[in-house]
Image (cartoon, rainbow over all chains, first blue to last red; front, side, top):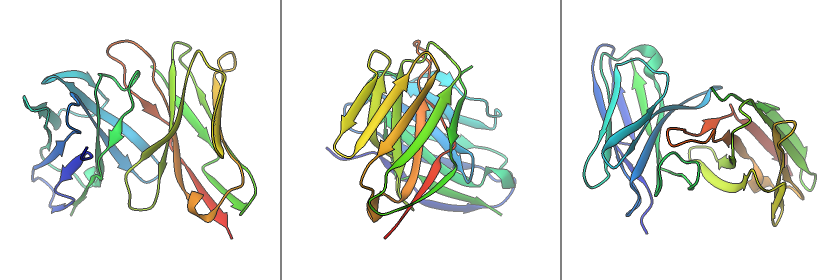
Length: 115
Length: 113
């Protein structure tokens, strides 16, 4: 099976712009979770989508949003970019929801740089 | 909510030595504890996990122990090799249909040849 893929791999944006990141899960997986990774902060949970519904949301401002399509592919959008949004954005897919009873498989990430 | 603390933040060992990374969690309802390894520039990959009904699990040179009473779990790597050098993350799942994995901040392990 093909692994989790993310596009684009790298992005450079300026403050105030918006950005859309894409994640394609492993075939058959219905859950996609998004994480923000910054140096020293580990992986911080953004949100999880399962069967096109947001199941859970982390403690991030409303500028961060997402959606999931019927083929389980997911997009994440960040509006009005700030310098502090510079990070590696990782998505992870699993067959079941929540990551608690099923292994999460990570994508390679999208490196976002905000200038 | 759940909080996971991970120690140490950096760890340097000589090749062949053992390495131990410890994590504590706050939510006694947490029932699933995976460990991920992230090499430089690569994606996190699951290396071992343990569920709350098991006290210890081993896979070749890697083992994980869980102490539910003390609410801590540890990763043990024996006979370390240079390719074990990476950042290791522990995580805890607090349970429930709306839960999600909570990660520790990571431990950078360096294995010196």
